[in-house]
Every structure is written in C-alpha cells, then in structure tokens.
Amino acid sequence: MNFATAPGPTEPQFAGERLPDVRLASAAYWLTLSAAVAPILSTAVMNILLGAAVAVTLLAYRRFEMPGGLLLPLLLFFGGTVIAMLASPDPAAGLPQIKKFYIYLALPLTFTVFRRHGRLERLVAGWAVLAAASALWSFGQFLMKRQEAMALGQNFYLHYVGQRA
Figure 1 (cartoon, helix red, strand yellow):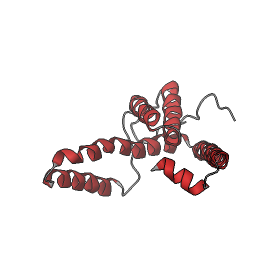
Figure 2 (cartoon, helix red, strand yellow):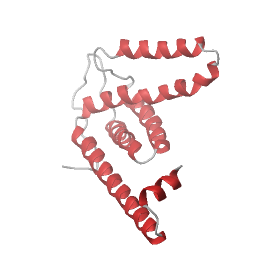
Figure 3 (cartoon, rainbow, N blue to C red):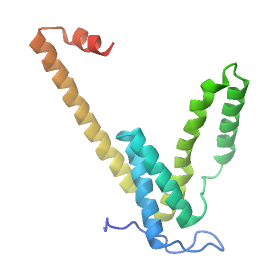
Figure 4 (spheres, rainbow, N blue to C red):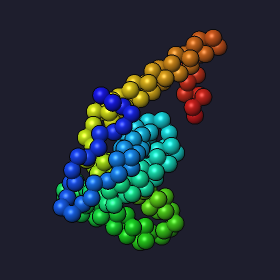
C-alpha cells in the first residue's frame, strides 16, 4: 500500500466527464481525509482544511455529488432554519446557526472524494487512532487531578467539581 499518493479514479464517473489531474485528485483526497479527522483535534484546523478541501475538490472534479435522497431533506432543514431565524424577535441571534451551514459542505465533499477514491479504511483508522489518543490523554488528565486532590488532602470529587464550576 502506497501512502504517498491517494488512489485515483481510473475512469470518469459520469458521461462527458473529464478525468481530473492526478495531483489535484490526490490533494483533494488527502485534504478531505485530514478535514474529516481534524475535529477530534481542533475545530479551527478542521475549518481551514475543509475550506482547502472544498476548493481543491472543485478544481479537480468541477462539481460535488450528494448521496441519493439527502438533498431535499437538507434543503428543507436549511430553509426551516432560515425561516425560524427571520421569524424570530431577534434574528441576529440566529446568525451563528447560519454560519454553521459551512460544516455541511463536509457531506458532499466526503461523498464526492471517497466515492471516487475509495480507501475509506484510512478515514476510519484515523478516527480510531485519534479517538484512542484522546481517550488516553483524558485518562492521564484524570489521574493528575486525582493525585493533585490527594496531595491537598481533599475529596477528589469536590476538588474536581470545585475547579470546573
């Protein structure tokens, strides 16, 4: 298995479609893979990678694809959110929800890229490795807090909750 480049599409997916540049397709794959595992580490990094992946994927493939039957419910959700915001006594309070629509680009992005390239096991492996690392890190933090409470002679629960509240 060669991890240096992503597996590329060997033939156009649709009639009349051109085969994308291999470098752009590879970049789209790796950026999409990185954007999909990044939320475990950092939301800001994920947003940057998502934007880069969207741009490169559009350069490589010229369009996004959606799983069948999801476009209408998604559009209804977006429309309902906008209507609720506009009908609200304080529409400005709904702007953060509208800004989050950007994250929904991950759906057509991952569908487009992974449908053409496959290799979904890399995504699942990335999630598993980062989730395990995060769990180990959390367990280490828990043990440090426990030792801190014991050194101070305090009840662990009260010490932990007192610092969080």
